[in-house]
Length: 112
Length: 116
Image (cartoon, rainbow over all chains, first blue to last red):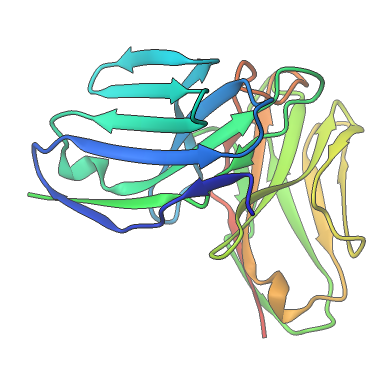
């Protein structure tokens, strides 16, 4: 079993839709939770990160962590064609070297 | 543009060969990380260097090695290449050494390695 599981998609939505991207993880010791966006033929870029449980909002993006169910979510409001990319969730421990453990990514396609 | 540069962009080679991938971190960043991205395994951490010294190892094969030079650029050496080594190899850099969420890693554009 992988430490972080993510549905590969693709997830196809029309422009303006609310998008929900999700991951589950197995190690309850993970404390940091991140979302990266990766455009085709580019490296991943950090979108948001949260510490422990709770919500964090940044513009059209909301990250949500539920540690009791080991569930990570990213919501995108008013999705745009420019949001079309692969979204990677990642987790890290809180002590020592915080190796990032990534999900395999969900490909999102937003059609105009 | 993240400020991290990687060369070459593409590399095609044969099984059994050896290749070197190069990475220049963002100006001011002391940590360099190497990752391998394949379709089935996703993005996997290989190794980290901080200011010239190895700081952490992940799922790096013995056939692979890396180093960070005094000017902070880094090289990843892959030897005795196998078909399964075909993947995207990313370099990332950060200011500090903790590697976690609070020490944002900036990724380069990657090197696509194809082993035939």
